[in-house]
Length: 337
Ligand SMILES: Cc1cc2nc3c(=O)[nH]c(=O)nc-3n(C[C@H](O)[C@H](O)[C@H](O)COP(=O)(O)O)c2cc1C
Image (tube, rainbow, N blue to C red; front, side, top):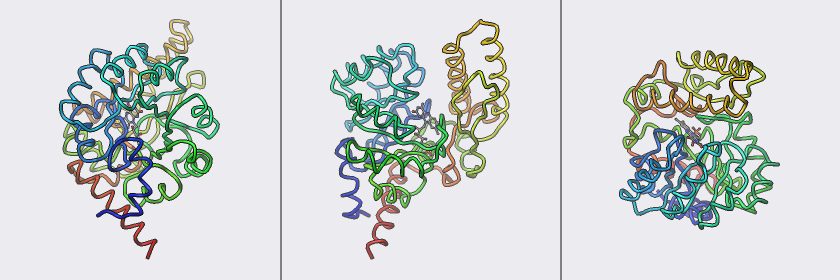
């Protein structure tokens, strides 16, 4: 079902992304590879490859393989703390990737220039209004505002609050995409009406038919409810770890042990803070791989957002997008009536 109001509200985001529906499928490490990304873009939304800890050679192959499956635009998500960030930017430039999403903190010196020099549009996460302003001043083309309801690495503030703080101030200047906790189209309609150019969803797409996630991983999602998707806790004040939202399992406890181990190495001087944080990130990458690829839903990390309760069965990406658009259109039509 299309609705002229929905089309109008999504027009800016769609034009920015170069697709019909201003809905990004947020990059999910191990999940957002060629199959899911191309399916999302082919269905009229916007897929994003999760580079995660990939080497430049692996990213090169993944972009080429995705291109072979779609002629629609898609993006690449790069993590700022990746030791080869600039090589990865180069790989994207060689493939003329149109959109890059930088995640994991403020863009390091020179990275914004390197990305924009090659003509790509740059999206960054804005965890607070002050940072949103700073990012736009430094040349970022669009913002993603992601609340703590989301799956994966999260900030401390809820989506609803960030949207109220950031949209009125920033939505005139650059397209702002809202993420975190969105499971249905009614919520999409509400954020669009508040000034968002579009939205980003991860959890809702993780178990799509085209997702290569292991059947065990998908089953865990279908069984879970919102309250099962909990944020990790920091056990040592000296070691600030970015919280991760995932379904509670034995891996949740294993992370506590990992933090103790890394904190001890930090104390002994065997690691500096940067290296300690990188170890934590490598831990997550490995744990997520065990769950997504190997199907180890006990020991691995089942990163999931609170919207997981609305993921109840495997569905093709096109059906998920159609349902979201129908729900959004229905909500807007109800308001108009
Ligand atoms: C399994 C999983 C892995 C994720 N990995 C990444 C990642 O590698 N990089 C990133 O920027 N965001 C990552 N995210 C966040 C998503 O891109 C997206 O912003 C988030 O899922 C949106 O919130 P939602 O889960 O409530 O839909 C991940 C999320 C999930 C559920």
